[in-house]
Image (cartoon, rainbow, N blue to C red):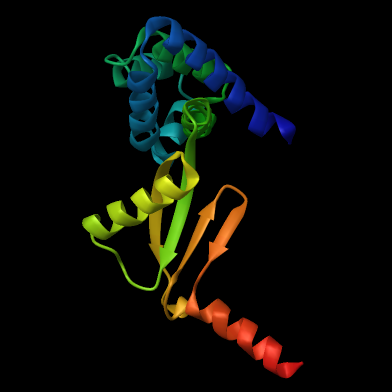
Length: 176
């Protein structure tokens, strides 16, 4: 089971080394993310179908990645040959994680009771960046059960200022 986590990371590390040498870290990231979105489960099943000769599957994949950087085309071909093409989304995710870690970017999941507009999202992320001293890449979610306030998950740290949690703490304190 360890292989599922380590194989994508090894591919990602190799691609990051090449991208760094080429000065193309961001274009490689964009390419991997685009491929990950484009090659959905149906296409992956199709290119893994053993009833189709490998050369035909290779030709189909080569056409799909023809505009991508040479190293990515080579890795995709290698993954297809080794029947590992299904881990391509994991490779893209691992590559992004490596780049974020290297650049000191923190990933945050911010959950609020109602959706925030773009200005509110930027303001909240700006305050988090100021407080942490790091660049933050945030995703936003809505959970009406929070009643009010927000939850911010950054790595393994949870900042929970939701009204639901405050009420739960108050109930526990009153029950003592």
